[in-house]
Amino acid sequence: MWLSKKKLDWWLIIPVFFLLAWSIIHLYTICVGTSYYYFQRQLIWIGIGTFLLFLFYILPDTIWFKLSYIGYIAIAILLIAVLMKKEAIYGAKRWLEIGFIRFQPSEFAKLILILSLARILSNRKEIGWKITIISFLLTLFLSLLIAAQPDLGTALIFLSLWFVLIFVSGISLRKFLIIIGTILTLFPISYTFLLPYQKMRILTFLEPQRDPLGAGWSTLQSKIALGSGGLLGKGIGGAAHTKLRYLPQPFTDFIFSSIGEEWGFLGVLTIITAFIVMVIRGIILGLREGNSFSGLFITGFTVLIAIQAFINMGMASGIIPVTGVPLPFVSYGGSSIFLFLCGVGIILSFSKRGS
Figure 1 (tube, rainbow, N blue to C red):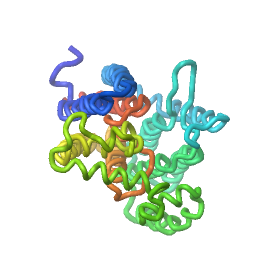
Figure 2: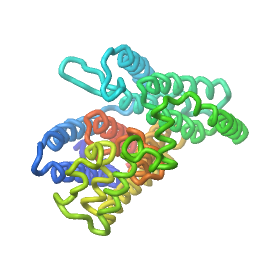
Figure 3: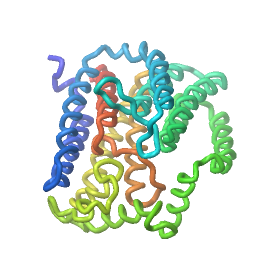
Figure 4: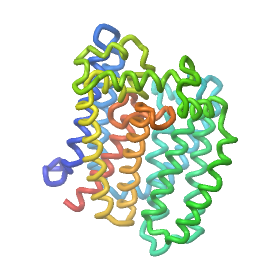
């Protein structure tokens, strides 16, 4: 039987579906008394995403190596198509409509980039400058397309993924130190290329009271909501700060703060624990596979989960600047749910070989 207990990695499956269940329950509780739009659609996204997870699990794992470069070309075309759109939503061009389907190509680009980098960097005795530069240019191209939307947070995640995978693939310490030195040298210069609102986000992160009713509003309200839950939270349906809409985007970017208000410190700690279990298991699987294609993909996707979870939680608690990065498996949104469930499906397809 293709879903036998021996082949399913329960250390990965259980925290994933625990977070999905929490997402559904929490979205329902903060929708009580208002529209159930987000709750109902999240149910649909998770249902379709779960189907995709098991579909990707049973597909031959060799298919991902073959499709990686084709996928890269396809996602690059979609990202260019996004930039060619005339209309923008909330000042950004991030979504694409094909018929009745509306999705965010930049989310799926994360999966494609990891597959492409895993292919070009895998099974090499030595990572030379040629491969290093080619892999960087592949990453930079997609990063620039996404930064132009503008979505700087996702673009930086792409560069972080390249940085981690180039290290894990076995690059020499000397080359790696040169890369670090180059990044540290160019980092201050990059500030001059930021858009005005992006610079303001950094300034208000350092001093939220600089613009408490404008750029600093999200951070201040998020910290208030997160801290007001105390140890046990305000109870189901009791998240007043969330329900009165003082907390911006409680279903997506700031869902972690909303969880903190309703479920308290213990609820937040439970969410963090689920991510820790998932990330540790992913690292173990990645180390088991080494610098093979499957090993690099598992490591890269695990790092993606860890980075996004840290950024979202850090943004909610005010320890990093605000950026529109969803909390994996928890935030509302079909594109994000599909991305992470498809990625977990691919990891499971690789992990069953060592069952």
